[in-house]
Image (cartoon, rainbow, N blue to C red):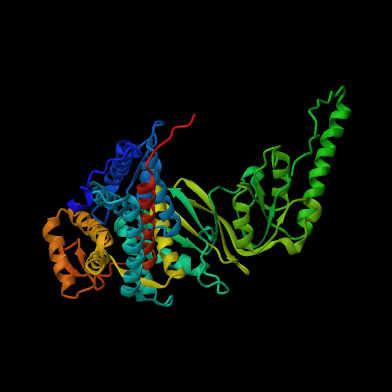
Length: 533
């Protein structure tokens, strides 16, 4: 090594002195900033990881240990540290789970890079070797993976519950994991079997009850009560449902105007016209046999007035108003109907059909449930309950992670052991591979292999075990050929992790390693920060 750094001093009049100090300083500052971000989330890795309480300036409090959420809410100013926040976001988009893992791996790689740089190895050499190592790592992981069939519901549930075990709501994993699996499997389209659009799974949060009361609803749930004005119906069997985007209220002119009414006959005429206008609309609606109206929220004027609600109640039509504009697409897909934008286009074939639309009271709040939908689209709704807002939000985030895990398995049907087993195995195989490589490359790959040990080390540390003893024993087991030996956090010892049902999708591990490496390579290549006004 010394021979590399101490080059013979050459002196010639043409050569000028190049100051590399600043470049090294910037590089070190970047790496230090990024590492401090990684250290911040390191403690929340794994099933025994700690939770973070995030309190924002407006008094909002979030309790979570989802890496992406923590980093998202953190105010990071240093540009290189921001890259780690983006990194966890991209892992969240690619795999949905492993957002903490990816940041911790990146932090460990950066630590190794600092050592390599101080030995005088050029950043480009390090960067290229890291790329090589990560490609090799993906191959090793793929060789370790166990193929899986979608019909094997047990394995899907195992991997979903592994994802939930590291969350605040881990004690409910027996309920939430099967729920996540069923909801994803119910929206898989046979035409495109490896694509799942998570927008087809709607999560409705309702305060009250406990997480145990969370349920999967085959149909629709509206987080509002039916309109009770003028005694309208709140339960409708054999419902014919219309989703309307127009207003059932007297029209307004396009310009700001004021009408001056001088005598009562004119006033009566205005009211009479309004009544006739509304009645005309309601007759058209009733003529198609429609008996449930979902009315989109309107900005310009009231979607419904007291008068129109009164007439709708008389016509025995159930009204649910203030449907959000973003939900219209989901609703029409579920009900298999078309949104109606104008009263003239109101026809029977645009309606959706359901066996029952009823208002259900949950505690002190009420929701509207639509069940028994005919020709229902491939969507599903999950009603999440929780005793307070913090638990509710965290349950939603955890459920989202579990859904993402099942989605990963649908798109890439391979399982891999959890509990630090794949990382140690990678570390061992890459370490052996680095001895074959020549020169600097082997040196860099060995550092990459050492960096991966941070995951089992942190898992053991967070569980209160002795990290050095555990990682050494883990290496020993893997060297004897036990590929799936990992840290069993519950028993505090090393066991075969596949038998303990701790499994994760292959996609989570591979994307964590490739994304972390990519991010580290970007940070290494930066040698100056230029501030522009």
